[in-house]
Amino acid sequence: MAGIYIHIPFCRQACHYCNFYFTTSPARREQLVGAIIHEAELTRDYLCGEVIETIYLGGGTPTMLEKGQIQQILEGIYKWYPDVNLKELTIEANPDDLTDEKVAELTSLRALGLNRLSIGVQSFHEVDLIYMNRAHNATEALDAIERVQAAGFSNLTIDLIYGTPSMSDEAWRLNIRKAFELGIPHISSYALTVEPKTYLDKNIRTGRVLPVDDAQSSRQFDILMEEMAAHGYDQYEISNFALPGHRAVHNTNYWRGTKYLGLGPSAHSYDGSSRRWNVANNDAYIRTIISDGEVPYETEILTPAQRANEYIMTSLRTMWGCDLTNEQIINYNDQIRQSLANMDHGHYILQDKVIKLTQAGKHYADRIASELFVDEP
Ligand code: SF4
Image: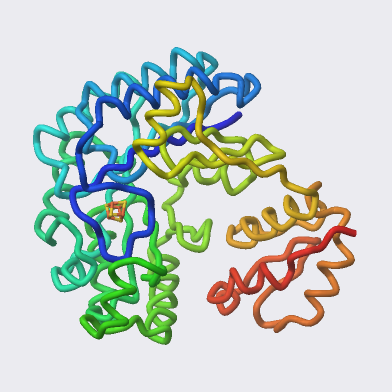
C-alpha cells in the first residue's frame, strides 16, 4: 500500500509564520495542473505497483484551483495509477475559500473519492488571525465549518495553532472547546514556530510584533493534551488528535514508513530506500516537465543508520512508540539502550521493548529523538 501527495502551491496571501513553498500569484495554474498530470505519468513506476490507499491534496491552498482542475488531477492519477483501493482522499482548504459555490464543487468531487476535508482554521479569535496574517476572520472560520457540515462532510480535521503571543491560556482553552462544540472529530495542533526568513521572523526581529514565548507554548501544549484526553480524543501523534475511527490514514501510513509519491513543486517522495524532493519553483517545475519531459528532483539514498534515525524520529512521536524489534533499528539496540540510560527517566517509558514518551517527554520529542540517533556500526 502507498499514498500520493499533491502539492498545490497557491495561496491567497502569505501567512506570516509560513515556510512552505507557495506563491500568491495565481498565474500559470493551468500549466501547473498539466505538469502535475504529466509528472504522474512520468513517475508511474515509482511505487512499483503498490496499491494506492490514500491521496492527499495539500499546499498551499488546493481549493484555489477550479473544480475542473482538481478533477483533471485526480483523473490523471487514476489513469496512471490504476491500482487504487482508496481509503481516504483529503483536500486542504482555508475558511475564506469555502464559499457556498466552493462547497458545492467539493461535494461533487465526492464522485472521484473525496471524503475528507482539512480546514486551516488556526484560531477562532480575531486577534490571533491578525497576528498570523491569515486571510480569513473568525466569523468565516465558523461559517466555513457549518457550511461543509451542512453539505454532509463529517470527516473533518482542522488545524489550530497555540503559542501566539496574542492568545491567553483561557482563550486557547476556548479555541479547543469551540472545536469540540462544533463536533470536529480530528484536530491537528501545532505550536507557533518562528522559521528563519519568514515575515514573522523579520517582524519579531524588528520589534513590530511580540516574540513567541516558549513557556506560554509549553503551558498551552499541556492544556491541549489535557483537554483532548478529557474529551475522548486519542493523541495518536504528538500534534494529532482523533476521536475513535477518525485517525488520518494518509499521515498514519507516512509515520509508519509506507511508501509515498509526492507530485508538484517541492513535493517529497519515499520509496522505502531513498527520498527525493522536487524543485521548489513553479516555473522550473513546469518547464522541466513540459519541455524536457523530466521531473526536476534531487534524491538521497538513505543509509541503514539514516533509515533507523527516521524511524526513531517519527515513531517516537506516535502513540505506538519506537519498537526496538522493528527491522529498521534491530541492529542498533545497543546504541539506543546506551543513549536511553543517559536520558531523563521521567521523559520516557520502556516497556515490552517499546519506548514511549511520557507527557513531560512529549515537550522535548525532537530533542529526545536526536539523542537516540544512531551511527553506522
Ligand atoms: S495558507 Fe497555508 S500554505 Fe498558504 S501561506 Fe498560509 S500557512 Fe502557508
